[in-house]
Image (tube, rainbow, N blue to C red; front, side, top):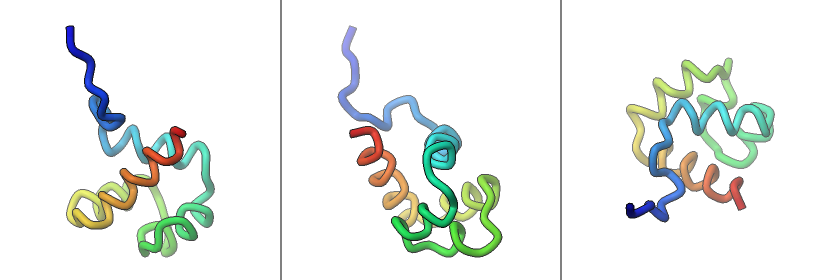
Length: 70
């Protein structure tokens, strides 16, 4: 059976956000990734709504998540 080397394989955006929020405060996330959904009244739900509609922001969050695994 082939296992994917992609660290995002099998991960939902919700899983990624829950992982990041468990390890970083909203302030730390907004410092690392300059997007308003982490600065203005942040929540996982509002972040997911924004990130699902905004591919460039989702890419930044996914890249940050991959870096956080190292």
